[in-house]
Image (cartoon, rainbow, N blue to C red; front, side, top):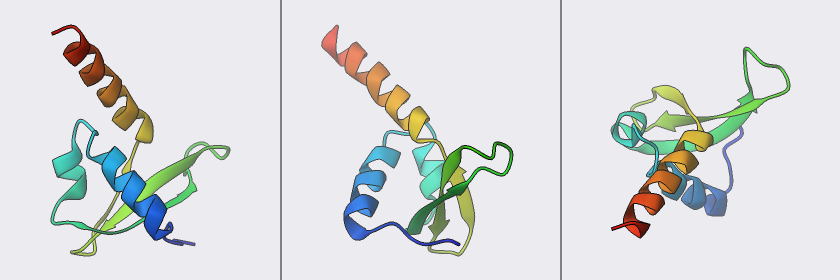
Length: 79
């Protein structure tokens, strides 16, 4: 069920996750793996989850990562 994403996808997602507004909280002590699975509340949606090196797990929204990046880009563009 928790099939980790490939190394190339992992690197991409790690870069994307660094743009999450709560990236330090999400990453914690470090990331062991990232995977996606169906959302427990909305059947037709999938969510990304990560397992930290300490064994804890948490979900994250790639949409929040992209939204944060877009806001930063707009701010920098206007400086």
